[in-house]
Image (cartoon, rainbow, N blue to C red):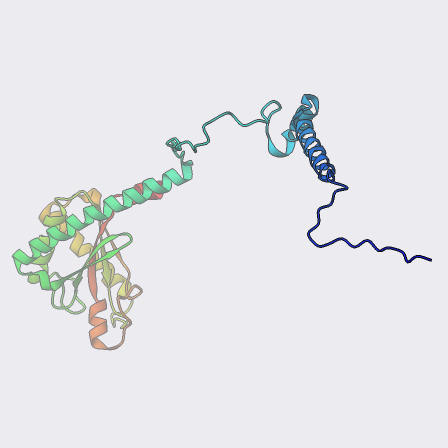
Amino acid sequence: MPAARTSVRRRGAKDEGGGAGWLTTYGDLVTLLMCFFVLLYAMSEVDIAKFQAFVSGLAVPFGNQAGEGLLPENDGLVPEPSPSVVPPVELTPDVSQLLDRAAAAEAAMARLDEVSEALDEALTEAGLVDLVDQRREERGLVVSVASDDVLFALGSTDISSIGAKVIATVAETLGDFPHEVLVEGHTDDLPLRRGSYTNWNLSTDRSVAVLSRMVERHDFPTHRIGAVGYGEYRPLVENKGSSSRARNRRVDFVVLRDDAASETEL
């Protein structure tokens, strides 16, 4: 029996049988490309009715109106922001009143500065500036003069000669300004040994004595001045020792802020 032949292809020999097999792969590629372009064409078709329904559905959550679903045509550049106009702020009556009061208070304090400077100049010219102390309080300018050895002798209501000069300088200077003036008398905490005559009486009598001299000798307007005595109950410092008690025995000229009346009305 003859042996079967085995066909052996030599390496590098050409395939003379299926030379057109690449066409299958090419056909598959063309088919896939056609499907891809059909898909793109199908996506480009817009159902107007469905699109309008979609836009209408966004009206509630996003606040856009139907028909405004597309952005306006532009060149793609961000436009420059237009200058914003800030509307004027309307103040409530309460805030407006507070601002008016603050402005009035600031102006009033500035006018008190003028009073203080005028007093300093007048007292310096008279050689009395070291006998007077000025301080600023919420109600106005307080001009303090010691009672002992300046305005009065110890325990007395008779004005001394140097006290008369101080009162004259203060009265004539304050008379040039429209402010109201309150004369306040103060004592220390040591009780008087005069029976029923107390520190209340002494402080009040001293303030009235100063007021009377300002009005009678220096024509200070009576409608702009008043007097009060506080006894030992409004000390500058705690009554400890002779030096602190001497500071508390005083007469204060209180130059009231000229906006105090309007501030009370508000």
